[in-house]
Amino acid sequence: MKRELIKISEFQRRRWGDNGTPMCSQAIRNQIRNGVLPGEQIGKLWYVDWTAFSRSTTSSDLVAMVLKGVA
Image (tube, rainbow, N blue to C red; front, side, top):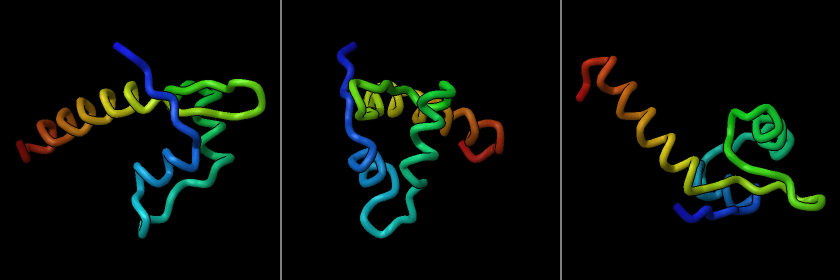
């Protein structure tokens, strides 16, 4: 599957929207560095792999709903 690497600012906009309160850039970089978020550093810039994030978020949300008995 093709990766879609997006900048952290774009990730914040897509994940939390225009009116949301996003996690700060440093926290996102730390999560990428620690393997919590899929992404990588290219040169001095950090990117989030949106395709991998979307795939993992969707399955995690479904699992959480099933475990809570919502679905």
